Length: 361
Image (cartoon, rainbow, N blue to C red):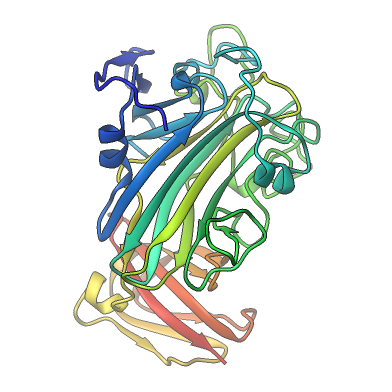
């Protein structure tokens, strides 16, 4: 574990409305503050990467869906700040090394410049959540060549997986592309070598952030340096309340030591929630029926407005996601879902969420 200074200096990279700024240094105290959200206890935080590669960030804009958090990179955190005025940003010690066998398994390529963050987490409730955005300078021109990526590995009671772990059953990656079992990497999530025209690989979750051209910059490329970003994605883990789990977050450069990649983690985004029922979170008169269900789901009593509905399986994989307007009542066709147990998440336009366990027969 690297103990750095406790001084936090914000370096502002842009002027105007949209800007990204990152901290000059970090400490274990800051990490605890930025990692630990509601209904969890985090202990034994450690990290292994160059000191310039991990920092706090503050952000105003639209592409990250986060206004403050933690940034882990394969180069320098300050190198992530916009405008996007180069297509080949990289920083830090040239080839500062560090590989990772788990990331090499997931990407199928040799890794360099790896940044690893590890900690133990004890949740109060049975669902562990984590919000993140992945960005990279490998986008878009090196799609299918340099497969930078990252993993969010969790191990502990009830979890088995192919990756390394202090637990004998191994660990599983819980940051996967919605509707798939694929880790978030350059080759798995993109819109082709120009970022616009495809072929689409899960490109509904891809944001083309410009090409690093000279000024004047496109309006969407003034926020962050990286040429491509994912939309904000959700890690979702089913856990046992009160038990302690081990988390390992790792990001790395595939094959080379250039062209940085980074993960933006929402401040205090690690939290646990209880499936209290939609009515408890979004209104006292909300009724969801039937449950167990077969091919159709009905919800009554929600206030009229736009809602995001998401179904995830027991491994946290998103199997169905829709943005939909609800005017008092919703009847939803879920005949395409396989039989099993799901977590249904409903988020209203203000960001308030309700969670409900659903059994599909």
